[in-house]
Length: 162
Image (cartoon, rainbow, N blue to C red; front, top):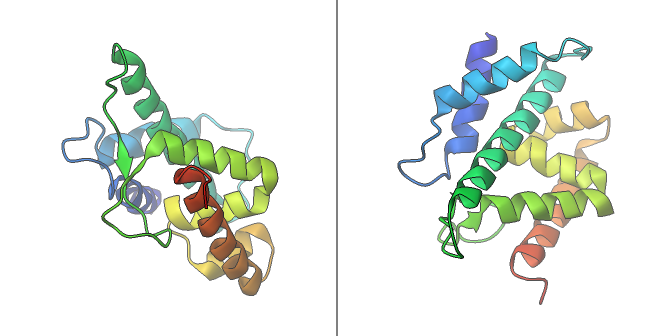
């Protein structure tokens, strides 16, 4: 059951990655599982808590992987690791995963809950109801946070000039 949930999250995380990405969904699941079993001090509350933690771990793994690839490059011609999302923009405009991560971290400094909503919905694939349960808020609050967070992230990813 755990493996199935982790694969679902990994497939969601990997969906927008570039073709030929050196990290495959199964490797992402294995790495996340190794980190999950290494967190013995976590008191798992329920399925939603597990999914939220898994999504956060997989996001960290992908960002670490992208940063490692950027550091391996010499000069300014770093290869982009892209993530296509439905944050309200077109699917034709991929966003750099590291830039998205940095924008999410900036959003977390401004509004932690909205950042968590994006992480749970986008990376974890949680429904509005599951996200509301994890964050102990109403579904209306999740929908409002989701809408505002998408707008904020799009502005940040476009350079904040809107």
